[in-house]
Length: 176
Image 1 (cartoon, rainbow, N blue to C red):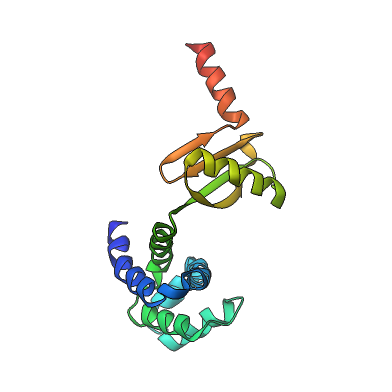
Image 2: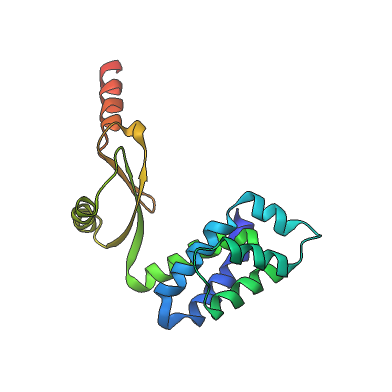
């Protein structure tokens, strides 16, 4: 994966410098592009020597939920013309890291056994920001095997208050 990260870095940095005034909007359309580019069938189509960059652009444009701004179209065309569509998810990740560094924030993934409504997520966000000492961009993923509670991953830090983790701890204590 180091190769993909090395390829993605100049694209992420160039895009970040180009959209420095409106990083939030660029992050939004870049995440959407990355989600589409992570589709294996699309990448197979793009890597096919018979597929032209215009065809790949057409397929990408047809799949996207919204129309891309001109800057996004130019960026996507550059990525496709250079054969770097597979690096687009990594470009988005590195762009997000640059954006977070500017804002003093971090991405956090909250694994929960159950759906969380907006009010619960807002309350949890305040508690977690106080616990980790920085602004967090929360993303919730369902993981029913947790049974209850949550597991929060912020970078390389993990806060696990799930029922599954507590049961695992009890199992270790009882078998020791």
